[in-house]
Image 1 (tube, helix red, strand yellow):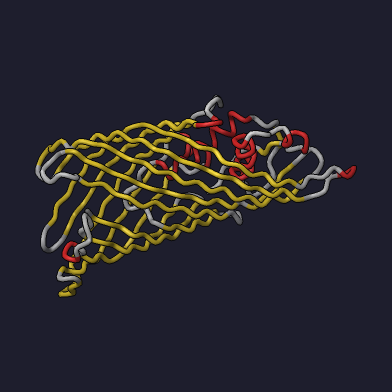
Image 2 (cartoon, helix red, strand yellow):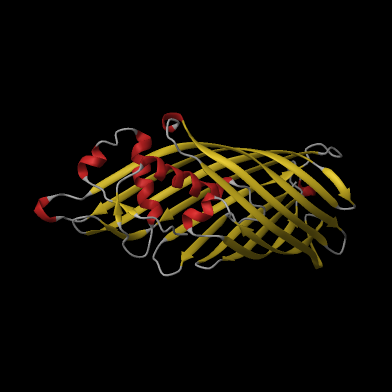
Length: 326
């Protein structure tokens, strides 16, 4: 994924004044998020504006995404930028027969853009690496609507951390050195809610699952960065479906082995979609499921191995997913 953000003009004395750890991160994050195929116009460094974009991009691993791959390798059309991401988690009713619902997700991302940075003196090469990790919990309540249909409001809380590292190489006229190594990190907290409409039907010949989910969360900097005038509203709307069929008479651990087919379409009307110029993503996947309820493993009733393909206007990714049913 790539964003179209103007490149800030970086000078040695300006970077030297970024003494605090969060300030160093924001400078690196501004480099990491630029990732454009060609040079952009220079502008002054705006810490609050860069923090907004850092929080926005972290939103991609903060918002729970059912069926997301555990490992995804993305290709950004027309660039050499690398983007790896993944998320694992799920939700269940911890007490059988109770409407109380719990969910938990952990996600990560690694972004390695290669691009040119335009300064008032000359263009320089930039190699950047930006990594983020986030955990999100959800507490919901099931309201039955009809047979197999449930309406589920969820309260979501999250905590994330992002680190950045950027190497700028090049030599400017008059012996002004433009070689920098910028590193740092920033912590973020988030809160919000989700509305879910879910359909589930489990039969011997097939399992059918479908859901519509809308999640809206607000991310703010924490710790030493809490005095920043920055925030990000990350919003995702997703339609998701899954079909599972027994594979002939195949058995494993005394239970049928099933083929799995799933698809989803996600829209990003929040800040994260604006920052990386990614308004939507579609995903299709296929895999195999093995029942593990009789193995003695607590809570886990089935394990799935999935291969998926994701695409958008300027985005392509292949992914490997490990799914669990509770």
